[in-house]
Image (cartoon, one colour):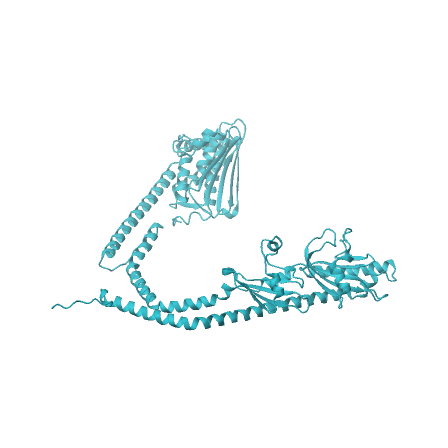
Length: 602
């Protein structure tokens, strides 16, 4: 008889490891759930009570701070209102006009000092029943359409047992042109002759200090503090405009009717706990509104802590899996980083060392071989470009225009026959210097000062040839003379200006060479007042198809090409020209002389 095979729960798993993980997870979850059932009720109650106590302490502290602030303002009002000058001035006691004006000046000085020292005070003023008034610095006046004596804050101070009153929030309209929401602290002024209260000193407070006291006290991320007076009117609320606009409501009637310090509302997710503290001094009630969901946030955190403990093994498994996957993908990440370096042109650090004998190891070896080959090809290309540029430089050095050389030697012979020996020496020296600079010096770059000397030698010869038909000036800032520049940049431009701009001019031609620094760039300018060019000619002057002339065998195209090849496309020659007015050629190079491009042969 065959026995029936029984399949247990654990027998359904293909590995013991999976069975152990599941059984252990179930045991932990059950244990945590039992613990939660016992502990959460106690934890919830404790957290709630602690939150209520903490909030109550915060609100009491705000109430105390506001009372201290009002005390401080009362002291200010006492100092300002208790002086004999104020009483005598307001009630027209025996004073000469000079004495009265002096007293007024002293009082207004005191008022001004108070205003300047306190940014939370809008107005400081004293008003008497007889119509006398002193307001702020003296420039303001009472609103003639308002009877100040009928204002609630005025009557409150006159009839208060202490002679002091603090108003609710209101718009102050007693002072002409000043209509601010304020809280008025008023103090009765006694006429010393009659012993009666016949005036009031008052200070209008803005909300900055009270707002600061309330907003600096945090009751969770959504909780807030507001203030009510004895009648339930809103003195301060962080969303005052919404309250006045009817877009937000508070349970004011319930708060005033509450006999305790706490009131909890049932509003679902928006359930609130109102915590109240009433001031014995002002009669105001400071109310803290906190959301129950925030108060119980710690309770939720405790729940999450227990749940995380229950899921510990699962998280452990996830972490181990994460570690293994990280180890597997680490070579791929290294390969990715190396590719990023290659993308940025950094071949020196792009090699990746992966010793694994698998597909990733094979891929890394191929990648290294590829990057080395690309790097070698790029280095070879850079070397060839550098050699090409050097060859071009040598060609330029050899291209002293034969027509120019012939004409110069002819001029030397002519001057020698004419007995102009000094001129012969000068022209010969300039020619020798020009030739020496052209055929010597293997450096690819020279200083701006050397380039200017080369051009000066060239212009010396041309000036002697053309005599009064050519005038030139050279003005280069001293601070750029040591800047490095590739050779033979200015001479082709100067030659071009003479032969195409000034040579056929009937009157004397002027050539100006300037050099200056602009930011991180150096500008060298060759300007002439010669024939100029049409816009169509200007568009083609820097193109390769520019025709070579006997006066300029190289042309400005070659200069432009060398400048941009060495410094980059953002540098080079730019032209401005008008037909019949002249031409301005500007060479722009970097201030560092192209050090960032490559190491030169200086």
